[in-house]
Length: 245
Image (cartoon, rainbow, N blue to C red):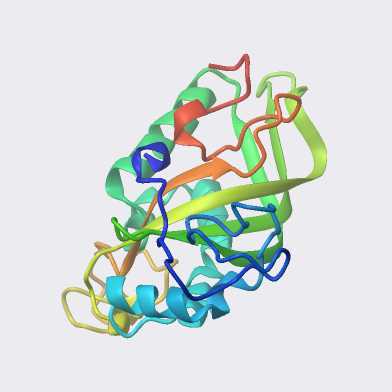
């Protein structure tokens, strides 16, 4: 899904210049200068053009507010994988994407070759890019986590490493048009406040049916496509380890 999104960012005739080469930045599709390759990681969110564009595609949002909103999502994704409550991702993941993940992980488990992803140690979340002609925002997620595939009969590891392994991923989000106030989950029956992990409403007892909030994740891909590294467990375009499909 991520690959289908436009790759062009905000075209700048004038305005921000690269801190590395002092030339005008050509766009904000990624956090690197198109002329000298200077990385703007950790700085992109502060550019006035980026702040303005964020407000245009998602009213009342700032890059800082978006980063704060996204900070807990990697841990929530791993909690979902560990518990199997995929539907809870409906708050902030596109339905076709979380359903695809659910099928793929279930398929590996059914073939007695489950993939374990756990023990997240999040290092950083930074703005990677923002679109001009389509409303998307990309984040770079860095950290480490357990990620390996094993034989459920022998418990032998088939792929991956039993120790936490660094990962770098690009997550693409699109706004839904919901107001910024929708960042707080509410029960659709009694309007009581909900935690992401709630399966039933703690107030009225009704089963929780998550409704999309202000942003939806539409794709995850590796930041570095190194053939010697195994694939991201959430890259829908190339799921699994190289020889596990």
